[in-house]
Length: 337
Ligand SMILES: C[S@@+](CC[C@H](N)C(=O)[O-])C[C@H]1O[C@@H](n2cnc3c(N)ncnc32)[C@H](O)[C@@H]1O
Ligand code: SF4
Image (cartoon, rainbow, N blue to C red; front, side, top):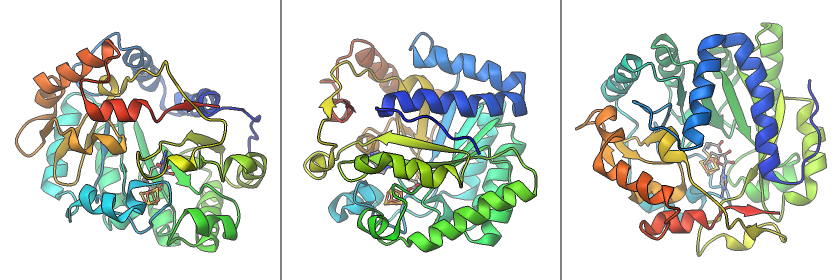
């Protein structure tokens, strides 16, 4: 397995991630993938608004089996407001989304947002459908508690290209303080089985990754985290902790300084579709109240080019975060170390 160098900030880590996953995916998926990534870079620079989003992130279930200390699902008051008793995304609506995405050759899809995708019993069927519809990059992030051998076997053959295991820690005592409701031994067993089976089947994809959100608790143990997980997965990644205003600011790493030059490019890259069909302009916890449309009533193409989306992009281009109060709060959650 590749062992990566230590980095001192999450920002540098993002660069490293891109290099590693990019190399494998470019090789496995060829020119279509390379061309998609070129478009992605242009979108990141906010130079163009593509005809259709390059990336669709679908929150199929909207709820979670854990209550992590860092997450909106970990705070009852926020969780109740956020999930509002959603039912899983209806299959007919999913088919509508996939059919439209196929028409526009949308390259990238994710099967999670602020929820746990493995709660969905037919997740693997939905991933296969997306693969057959022509998506190139199929991404899933999971806490891996429900990743039984049976599900791992199915997922390995589903067409998934990246799977991120959100583990934050590398031992039972730390895990149970952060990933509330989860079981470290189960997670370790599940991830080890997944990686071993991938090896046995001689599969290059999905790229496996263990991730850690950098808080004041986890930042002290980056080296050990890397040493532990780099033996078990393809890559390790550290993520910027986004604090929930009024709830979790105290969990920021001690030297964190708010990143003053933050710019947002999400509404040039992606949309998020929630289980009830609501469409959001980004994956931030804060965007839940910024509904820009609903796929039950409009096409994705219409929503992507709607007045609301244009207004959001226009204000973000001016770096005017005040226009949308939630963009303002979100922009203040990014930090440098
Ligand atoms: C919200 S989770 C949803 C998917 C799945 N339940 C999981 O935990 O992997 C998506 C990613 O957000 C990360 N995350 C949780 N709280 C966060 C925070 N406050 N700031 C940044 N990332 C966070 C998780 O570790 C995970 O990698
Ligand atoms: S497992 Fe994922 S969605 Fe669930 S509480 Fe933890 S970070 Fe949030």
